Length: 91
Image 1 (cartoon, helix red, strand yellow):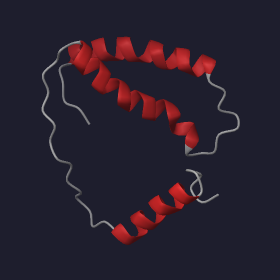
Image 2 (cartoon, rainbow, N blue to C red; image 1 turned 60 degrees about the vertical axis):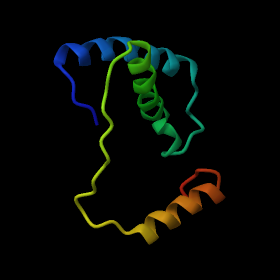
Image 3 (cartoon, rainbow, N blue to C red; image 1 turned 90 degrees about the vertical axis):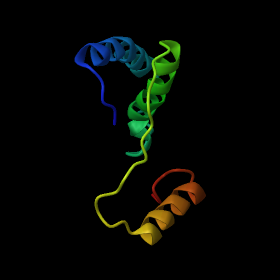
Image 4 (cartoon, one colour; image 1 turned 45 degrees about the horizontal axis):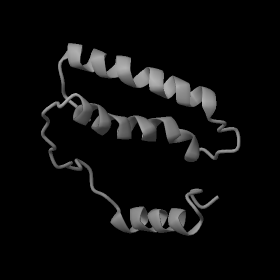
């Protein structure tokens, strides 16, 4: 999540989306499972840090707070299953 002015968001989006569209043209995801198809979102998340550093933008990172109760055993089990099966969500 990020909080920024409209003009800053527009500048970021104008920089990021052409990169993601180029990646989409050059990456065949036809053999990817539903989790792996989220690759564009994952890359977009990484690009935010690159953009902020390249533009020398100041930012503050705030700890994430879960509003709902988390089942850490279930989450941990799913995480381990993805690691054991190579990130395929156990499929």
